[in-house]
Image (cartoon, rainbow over all chains, first blue to last red; front, side, top):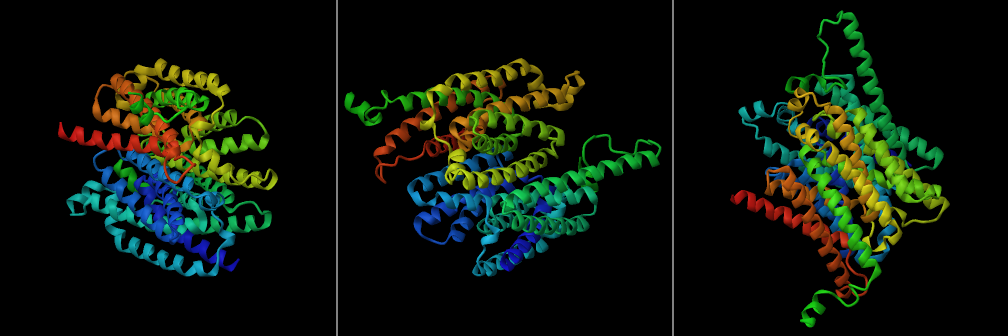
Length: 285
Length: 286
């Protein structure tokens, strides 16, 4: 139980940080495709009898870099979809070769936080440290390139190089989280928590901190609820994430309504309709 | 001559009932997916197309648990999911992936719960794998009329909307300036997408559904700039990949490791992927 809490908290911190940039860059599809596709690596590693973590790492890195390179010339989302299905197709081939793997697919997809062994804590923590360090190191160029790509280019920040770096961090994050919590949990956390956080604040550092805090709350409440009810953790993470996002949207709409009232409908409110994207990206659009 | 055909078509290929159903259903699905997919790629909604396939898993396992046919579960949940995506804001380029992601996360969470309940009360652990990966050789012949009906419905929506849909996919502003109700057109298109993906996910599995939706369409749009022609080319690529994949999978029964056969989805996806890469070389050369 202590292991589950520790590992889930580590995962939440990484998901909150990496997820902030995922949402900022509009890379939700890649954040879904890389962990999901890397499952083929686990199936392949199982077939060859080598470490699952190694297989996951190789496939998520290859997938992420493949998306980055091919996406340069083609339509980014179509390339992501094709890379994902290519990896999944390889996975289904590996699965068809080994007969005993089927039940483990479930745990890879939906995770088994409550069944984490104590020898899994150290590698997860180590990979998490690398992820956090990479995000801290890349923070300024990544933020600039995500929000104002042209200004970044003018200042010598190559958008393409930053994209590849970010994809590598994403691959690393999914490698460490998939065997522990499954592809589903990491995706919900990476999207739901930061998207909600951005409804509450426009300032990037505050939004990042808030995103981590929300991710931690989601994970902790999900583990507690799962422990009480015996239902899978993934269910609670998925539904709580969506609920928090709905709350954030509601808050943003309420605050906007108030601004219009106070300002006497001076036309200062965004006329685009729907949710806010935070001050930084409002400049872009 | 017969030696050559014997080497290409393993014995019993033409007399097999499973192969015949796979060829018919696979062909219909490939044509519908290819046509709908051209607009999916043009509108940049590949993620929505992929997500609706995954979300179909939730409906399928829900229907399985309730004891009704998986088809209606998949169709129902995909239509509902598409409506929620529309409400959250899939029509704005910046909010597009986010809207899809939030719905996908919630639906997958529900899938986790349903699959858990399934394995607890019905004792079927393989259900997740069956629904996710599907198999063309396991389609019942009785589903052909339903497949045709859903396919026609999806194609009819796209055909009825053709011109306004095309214009609003190329330029939202221009379409709006011409008085096209862009949001209504977008919502109706999302409905067609949900039907097409539900149809594909039900028959050939989530992986192939995405591959047939995006791959042929993205390839066709690289080869030609004319949308009408792109739809025809996408349909042809999809059908060719599907049929060749079925043939290879049937033949692979005699390949090592013996007696299992390689999955159809592997062949079809690889064919589509290589055709896409090749088309990149062609368009670069010209």
